[in-house]
Length: 108
Image 1 (tube, rainbow, N blue to C red):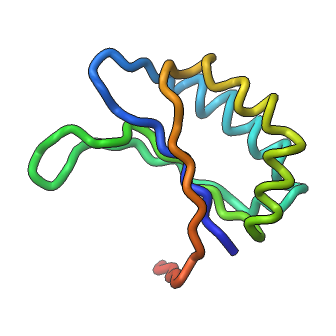
Image 2: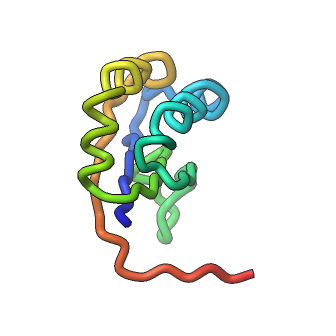
């Protein structure tokens, strides 16, 4: 299992349409990639740093994929459509990082 972090930078004058992102973009991601190894995703909105500063990323999508190869195959197959949708909700380009999940715990 890997975690794909898609991180949209903050900054003065940047635009991010959260409504579009949650109602159009992420359902598109889910629809295209669930059959290709996407297990689930979480969207988080940056609110600040511990010292009260602005968050370095305004929004992050955390996607759990079966493997790095599964993500790469999904991105190859549907990347033009999914990445091509980015200008519809933001004027920034995300940083994307793949990480191995070393530990996870769910508390109820």
